[in-house]
Structure formats: C-alpha cells, structure tokens
Image 1 (tube, rainbow, N blue to C red):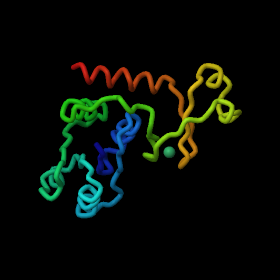
Image 2 (cartoon, rainbow, N blue to C red):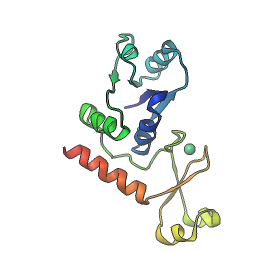
Image 3 (cartoon, protein in one colour):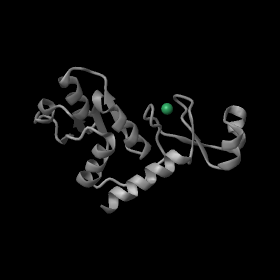
Image 4 (tube, rainbow, N blue to C red):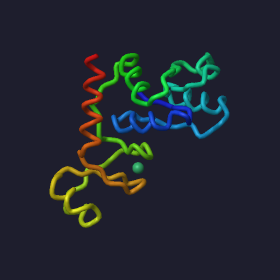
Length: 150
Ligand SMILES: [Zn+2]
C-alpha cells in the first residue's frame, strides 16, 4: 500500500513513513499532476481537498476531514486496516528505506547517552540521518497498537 498526499498533509506523511508506508507528498499545485502520479505509481491519494477527492480518474482516493494528524492516522488505520509490521524501515523525512548500521560505524556522530542505551541503529543513506528505537519509536508503536484495537 503506497500513498500520495497533498502538501497540507505533510505531518501525516511523516507518520505514515515512520510506520513503513511509502508516502510521497505532492509538490505540484496542479491536481492533474498529482492524480497522474497517483495513477502511474498506483498510490492511494490522501487529501483534504473535496474537489480532488471527487476526481474519479484516481482509483483510490480518501478525503480526510480531521484537522489533527493523529486523528487522520486513526481514521486510516480503521479505513485501510493499517498495521505496524514495517515500522522503523523508512525515513520519515525523505521516504527512503532505512538501512541497518552497526553501532561501531555510527561512532561519535550521536550523543554518548544514545550510544550507551541503544544497540540497534539505522541510517538513511539519502539524507544522512540516524535512527534508533527511542521514545518516538515507542510512542508511535503504542499509538499504532491502540489504533488497531479500537
Ligand atoms: Zn532520509
């Protein structure tokens, strides 16, 4: 399941990526271009635009009516039966897949406290950011588990 989101849903895109869902944010202001990408790449269109959500050229399109990204995500969990099977595999910032990196290769680039407390690290080769299973991971996982139950 892959997504294309209109730009007002950038925060939701980061949450979806963190959960492992391939999520592109459309930088084009033209709805035509956004729909073309959705069709070509077989992405589900997520938008807050009523006009765009009504466009029948796009096979799957979902209109999000909630303001808060957490509520939008909850809605998608219910609507699309999302899960957290692939959490921590994709960069929330750029949508690239994360790669495992041994702790000795992480070296001095991270705070000593982080290096002392975590053993599993991932890196985004595209934007150079490091990730570990810290509080953000735990919170997102708990949120996803909660959404799957309710
Ligand atoms: Zn990245």
